[in-house]
Length: 395
Image (cartoon, rainbow, N blue to C red; front, side):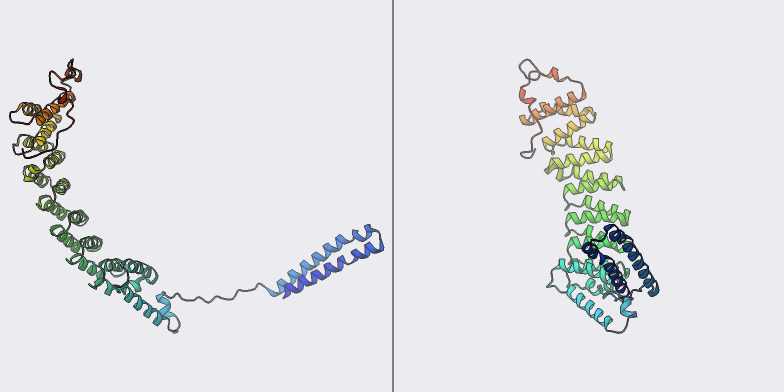
């Protein structure tokens, strides 16, 4: 109000200063005297008004803003306990109870309930997370919802969260993937129960190979010797595919070289290599990676094995030659001129022999070519054999 009065007074004075302007024009008074005094009058009026405004403001003092009433948040647990008794705690407790019931409701989509758990724990904090204990242990609730609730509980109550995760990881009725997720989450808080749950997954033949191998890798973070046992079990398991057995044997070599060699020898000499010569070659190659001497021996065994397919024997002999073993050259020469061998395999052996001669530098590529485009009297077809043919039947 004081500001308004000051501004009104200043406006009135300014109007009174400008009042002589039309009088000067009408009476034709000397404009120098009429307008010459107008500027100082305006300046005096402005200075007077400014001085009065500052005087009034100094008399009133600075205006204090009224205190804002801080309303407690609905999810604030401290406000529910320390605040006024106005029903806030009761409403908050009832809301949490209803939300927990909604999370356990099977008619609601599982993804929606998982997102609801994340949002409510962010809002309600520890109080809301601890109310999820019945959800985490309820067998009728979807396992992904139970797993999400248990993982959030572990931030505030490690004991109950560990029990819930262990129940999920050891429940045979739960899916393999969720059991693996629960055991992996359990490894961060309880190493022994996690190791037991992971080992159960590795040794369970009803579990998928991917989950069993992932469990063995997760076991490395918990117990290295137990992980070596798990990899050895998978590397020798007959129901596991040969490719995965080779991979497990390669990983096992980091902890136990002897067990890894034994597992690969079982593949090299087993029926799997006879049925698919590529597996035998891959096993011998893995053997050479972890133990070069054993790898050379594995290639030699495959090359002279009469039960092994001719394509595999030729490839094994060729790899022996590339490793600098003279037996590889001799075996390829024997294969090329052996009696009872199909022409296609004889030509393939001869082609591999020429490749070895060129790669080793003992034979120049120009010396191979004759005047008619052949190779030392051998038909051009020998040179054009690009790869060892796929097996068409038993050797």
